[in-house]
Length: 201
Image (tube, rainbow, N blue to C red; front, side, top):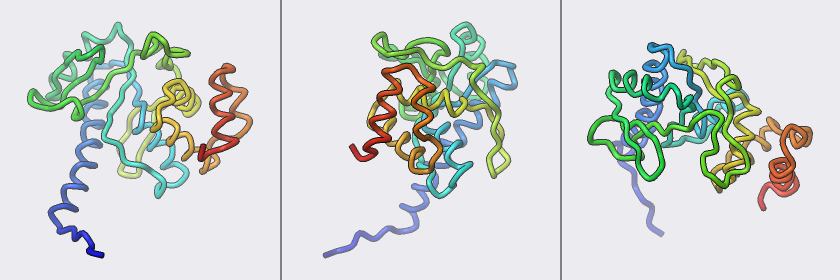
């Protein structure tokens, strides 16, 4: 059996890909904070921030930067983000800030609007910005993320495979337990119960 050999250039590109996502997150947060625009990081990066508080080795890298904004702040956010080099686009009902004029959708900051349903058939709306808190990384970076309860709730609402994977990670780290099922409405509580009963299901 042959073994694939990774040279340093491949490893360097892997590291660079992770660093680009983190840099994009930090630049977006700084741009919004400098303009006094409320925001909260959500999605995979919020999961990573919460997981890192328990076990840094369990953190999963993500290519997505998802940010929660109030719709009323969108125009001000466009101005602030443009100063940081981001370009606003609305594509297929998705609002995003591309990381430069030639960037692709995967190289963007994706916007979720606080207190609104991401899809019309979603069980519930996203979190409000009041459900957020400032966190500080080991590297000294500081930004707002959605609270753990709000994050779990949004993952239960979205219920994609990657959302269930994030929830399984938090269950394994004992960040979520049986008592959490009572924090949510019945459909969401039932989804969480199913994962608690059978994490691999």
